[in-house]
Length: 333
Image (cartoon, rainbow, N blue to C red; front, side):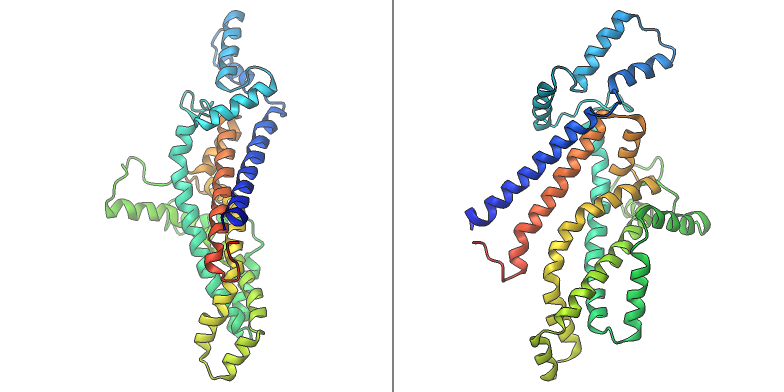
């Protein structure tokens, strides 16, 4: 069990993180943008005079802060050493606040939005997809799949904008953006929790509807094959109620591939969450990444990309290790 199942997957997990973080390190360094010169130019545009000696000293200090001192190999080694300490350096547009502090403030918002929307859309989508697949000869089932087929190709940002315009701008049922009312302090009171839900409802529902549409269609295709199996035919011939066949036999067996799809779709949903947060000005990683790209914040972009790689890889590893608990055909060998 340990040698043939756990260790290979853990090594693969480490390899994915190593390759991903290495790409995160090299890609920004091959771009024409120099964060040090960009910051010095920003300071000088404000009317601050800097003599050449001061510029030279500032350049050396900023290179140290941004991890750009020394050769490329030395930068790479220092990058990993700083990474193990959780040190991504200071942010540019929120200088001198450390990147890890900004990520720590924004990450809970994204994790909360992402985890709830992912799990709910996965559960609801699988149940609806199983019912639609089993009762596909019914008119309402074909209509439901037609709606899912219409919604699925819509990009995240377009769907989010549609919902925002209708429910926040026209109907004014929900706020246009943000994560909580201005000036309100976080607490465990019922009023604060309801306000959090009110602000998170539109980004949550926009991700859920698209996720449900994708999961429903996938589940419907899997169920269309499961209903042809001999054990389903035997259950029908034996007079077992359709409700029991649907949930206990068909959906239960069709759920096994969907456990893997849950892990594989995590990366796609994560990218969709970032875009959705930008549309709704939600104070998560998406909004933070947008500000980092807009200001050319070298350290913050690398920090967000690294945290994303580690988070998605960890989630996939957990699902992979738990999969044998769902599928009795897979054993720890």
